[in-house]
Image (cartoon, rainbow, N blue to C red):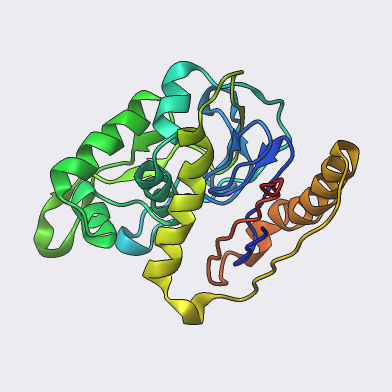
Length: 234
């Protein structure tokens, strides 16, 4: 099965924005999935600071080619839940408070806060600078710690981790509505293990090109998607 709603992909050994495959590798908010400790990110090159503009703020960080490493237990647990993947995606798009996240997700603020704390403890989410919101009240937003991660699952990663990205994308599609879909592809092929790996590499290379130049299109609408290559049941 291959479902794509725009630049986000999962293949062989790497997974992109809410996608997994092979030995589930994770990818989040809209670029490659590396772990926060290894990420070298940058902000506005003119002043080195992140610009905050309330609801419309985006922490622009350029994707970089970085080595990936096995996920530790805390990281794997944090990423094995569809709601947390949706929180990461939303906090990639803009810095949001817990209340704002709860409103967008249609969930109880207490539930959302629990998941936010799990992501923060795993080093995937961080508090953004305090800002003044509507009415003059101070707000404490969160943001994804980096826009690009590479993170491999350790051996024995379970089905919960593998299907969390699929569930997250299903929820995102329902929230965005059918009119948001730009492309959908479903296919069946006979592939050896080497064929499947090569197909994954070729698809990944195309997405890599777009991710590498994403900073040039920050004024365009944000898109998300998922490509899953799996072996059919007998």
